[in-house]
Amino acid sequence: MDAWSDFDKNNDGVVSIEEAFSVLSTLFGFSKAKIRKLLRSCDKDRDGSLNYSEFTRFYAKIKEERIYTQEIFAQIDTNHDGFVTKEEIQVGLRHMALSEDDVSRIMSAFDMDQNGILEFNEFARFWQS
Image (cartoon, rainbow, N blue to C red):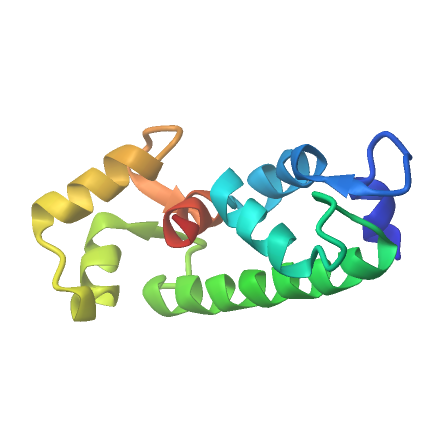
């Protein structure tokens, strides 16, 4: 699996939480808590890291999470321009009954470059939080 070498940075034959975080926080916007939860669910021998067999389950779960997040993002990004605005979030998440203040707080917390929109990775950080 090609992804294995991306995760096992020090080539010690296992993937640690730190190694997983260095990849997933950037690519998928996963928080350390989310990664820890996923890692624990796949760490069958409970040694705090993933061997190759455990990693294959972990990576499959990550891909499922990514696909789900992409589907939600695509639904909210109604004009399909590759980012979501404050208005799209409010409309797209209306079932959550978010106030304008709630949406403003989301934008403030997750719009890392403060450009007034959420690109996918910024949205993924919000959605995974």
